Length: 300
Length: 221
Ligand SMILES: Nc1ncnc2c1ncn2[C@@H]1O[C@H](COP(=O)(O)OP(=O)(O)O)[C@@H](O)[C@H]1O
Ligand SMILES: [Mg+2]
Image 1 (cartoon, rainbow over the protein chains, first blue to last red):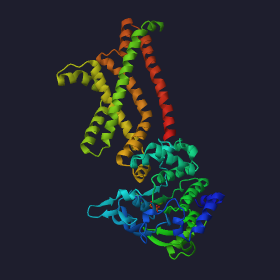
Image 2: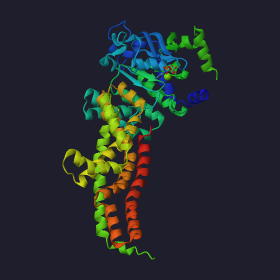
Image 3: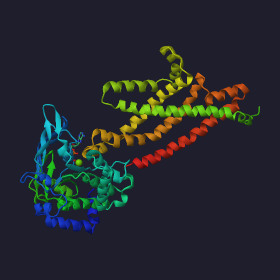
Image 4: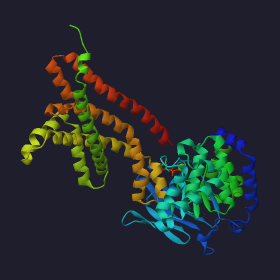
């Protein structure tokens, strides 16, 4: 696993590094990042001083014995690129799934751009989800989730057509533009099984972008990939970052984490243990648990 | 005793007519039965309990009794129960359709179950409504995945349709039996009839393998 990560690092193209450098030079000025001619203006966070995402006291258990989130609190400012790291089983996927309305919660709430959209109704043991708010968030998963019976272009246009009632022509035009931008224009009429893992994940990202999300969630989107395919996917995420897309990224790729994050969150045992700038977390972690985790990850 | 297969050739028109009826019955019951099976499979995974019970009872009953009894029941008992005569064609079509419905509903149910949970998560993440998920993601894949097994179901139906000769329908089996007893040449005639069944069924079973491979490749992720 670690050997694979090292190999991937070795294989990263010059392009990625260039994109990366651009981002890094911007890192100190997050706000500038978000506004300087960026495609994804963080309009959702119109009210200044208010976090884009506020996660409050989230509790989630899959069964009485499997308690996964134990009062998790987390704020994310507009224009941030939050990277969540932590041991596996620590609840990172569960957190993103809750934010996406894919899991019920036992208590707590999630706000987006000042609106509470996920909230546990403890009396009814149900989770209330405001779908209109939730639809402003896009997610890409670790597993391949393209629809195998549809072409790449159809995968992109399905949701815009059925969810928003966009015309086929208009959705296809936007889809082609996105695919071309991601270097996948030639694959528009191919089926998912004809694509490499890296291409599939890039299409999955494009599919989510078709709905103009105001926030993107990435849950270990490169962990199912062969090492040599990791870079092309990370590069696409880099491009998005460059355009000011707010994002929350779960990854085991510390090199990627270090370079794309505006803030890093170390999550373990269902709570946020520590958070800070990449420099703080990777070079001067305060908590023993964080140190232990990083030692394990970096000690090849 | 010497065998003279050329003698059978003299009856080719009758045999062809029999085959025609067999094929007609098979196609009719395959079409009606799989349409029925499709809706029954939906009923079996429905959230409405009575619908689940009734559909399960139906499927288990028709899977758990001999087709010949089902056929006899529709031919001999149903007319008594409803007080009107029904032709052997109607009885045969009804019973084979209901039988095929039960069998294919299991095929559709398995293919519905094979849709990956991750794709449903993606549907929700994309904001697709439940109806859209079903119409554009679940059903198209379920139907595609069902095709190879459905084809095998149809091949079985084609062979089992020989049972309708027992209620006097002039299908391939019935015609063969009659010729063979009329001319007292069971070896030649029945062998030829078996061959005719085989010649129709074999390409279909081969097609199942090919379609299956194609489908697996297409829907692989
Ligand atoms: N659907 C589920 N049912 C039961 N337990 C689950 C389910 N999903 C995850 N878990 C458990 O919850 C814990 C946290 O999982 P997860 O959120 O996937 O962690 P991470 O993404 O940080 O590795 C794990 O112990 C896992 O086994
Ligand atoms: Mg995970």
